[in-house]
Length: 118
Image 1 (cartoon, rainbow, N blue to C red):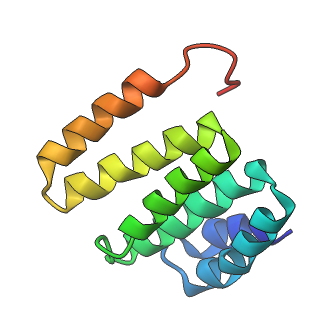
Image 2 (image 1 turned 60 degrees about the vertical axis):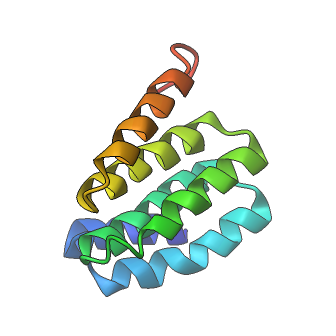
């Protein structure tokens, strides 16, 4: 429910709204405790995007790391792709083009080409 509330807040108020954070942050603990990978994807992306679009690019680094940790813990390729995608964006906007490019290559090589449903 919290993830859906976060999505509604994004639609009504935009990614950078404090209400997005207020809705999604509690959802993270719930999704982890219930091992709901589907909810984790939307929650982690929303938290990363909220932090990133508020101009806190360096702070948003923790969210891509947490996404990659969750991908490893749950063996979820969608979380893995999301983690690498957000890492590329973070590195790019921090001006770290070497890491952005190397992470892009890792993401591309690690992406399954079928059966993902995305």
